[in-house]
Length: 612
Image (cartoon, rainbow, N blue to C red; front, side):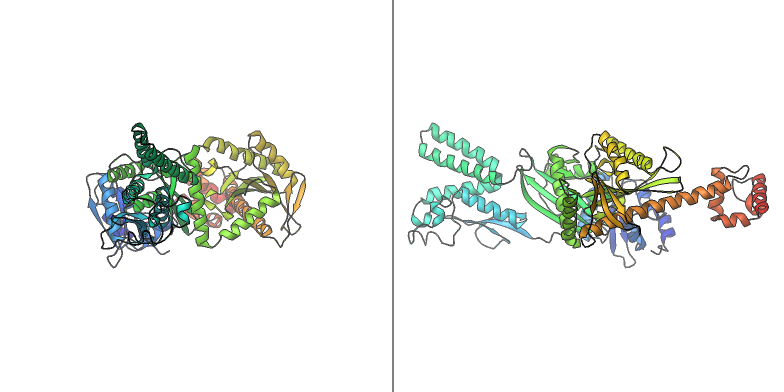
């Protein structure tokens, strides 16, 4: 990507900004706003954009490349900056901010006036005398709530018009199965019908818990007043509410309001999934496809602020799947919008962590559907699980390979495949430290031991080494498996370990297991998948080995010279770039390098010229 020629001027302007809170506004050459951000110290934050681009992720580099100028607004506090940032983003919809497009529309609950009022779900308000509840996001949850209210309070769902059609026909099946009070057959008085309608509206406004509490109080009062028929009807309504609520899967305990946010991303795209719980029940699910952002903590910040800038109902608790930039400010902002305390939580264990995992699964599924890979991924992982006799689908797979040259510069590579796709952010490299010389089994034992030790240290984080694999695949046969399994068992872990066996042409031939080898047919999807993993881990390990071996060879050559250690060898390589240039350099050229004395220069020159 070509560098923005205006970077020096933009940086010079940024360095004149004050060290105070504020909002910065990036514009392109047409004067259009392309990004809006907030900062605790404007000078520090904005100048970072226009320095070296090496530390920026892809999204930021693309944005900076298109910046022609920027503006800013000073605020009295970082919190005020956050409020202003959200407002300006909503007004201007900049290209490089996360923008959750609320294109699903809204739904309403319509209550027609008495006598004989009706409730229904609709998509818009009409200019009539009806009362409307809402708007709500997600038509499914609104339709479901209306159906529940009708069933509990035995309100009609047919197309008959009352009082016009009263007494003109017999009640339908819904009356006989206690889902309708049968006004068409004169089975209920207008007064009792309207009382049921009023209770249904209160149920829709306040939810099941409040309605049960209210009806229970009325039932007890009716029983105390010896109105046993009325008490029995109220009891039946309470049982209906409890029966209908039990049909739904209760995912969280209690009556706490809770929204759960999870982001899953591939190299190019990401999916944000949001699960909304009310009264312990899942009320709605939403997902948004976004550009990938390497900085997940910033992505979560932008996702949450964008989501609640769309006039959404704010819960008492927001659960997230990782760190969120400026989480305290977001909590303060949400609390002010709601009018009561709102907390952000990243659960590490327990029920909330399970719900978060469910949200992550939803995000992964939606992203997979968007990328057109879900079917294939699911099929190949299921096939692999059946082939290896695993108890669950291996969604998170780690693979290891050892690389060295005749026992020197021993290294190992670890690659990760998540949902059948490489998770490059989780790749790791290991330099073998426990011994010198060639010992592939010993090297693999050391690597797995170090990896599992890191898990024990970081398992509370649930990230990086804090995640255990569902399956370990080693580049090698039965010997590698036998070397590693005792290490895994010593940590008290139950992780399946298998080897990937190659044929004489270095192609995957079989999978090594405890009792021998499992043959893989070249016509099966799993053959291609395992071959891909084996090729990837071999490539990753050998690339690291070559880098280490080259560095080692250069360092060894220069450190043979009197007075030249590793530090001076590094200085020479940084200055001359190649060994060829060092060999052909004159004594004067050598001593002109900062950190290289005249004596060092003479020794280096003499070494290479004598050698020639």
